[in-house]
Image (tube, rainbow, N blue to C red; front, side, top):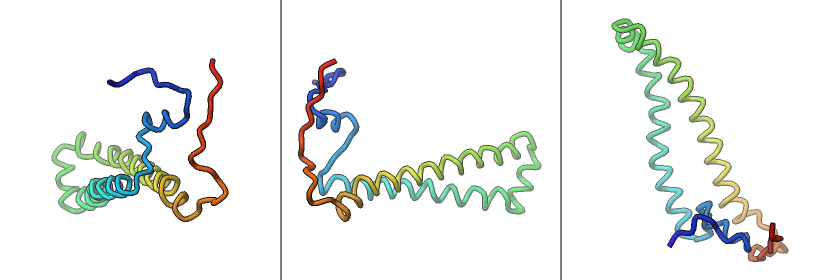
Length: 119
């Protein structure tokens, strides 16, 4: 049963809350599956402005200027959120896979259990 109040005696208990996994199969599998979905996000970031700012897109925007030109503002927000998404995914990939795999300090004990002081 899910306990909404986690046991905070061990830091490793927090890993389950955050979705952390050090499984050698699960992380790469989910990363690739997310990459496939992210490819659709990337495609829309490229394809929407190509269509919107083409001659046909301008003609379409003139049919309903209030809505047609609103697409520009929506796209700018979309592009800003997309850049944040890409930066987040690169950060997660670096800290969750690249750094521990290729730049790990052999002296560091990654299985160390830390006891937290009671409140």
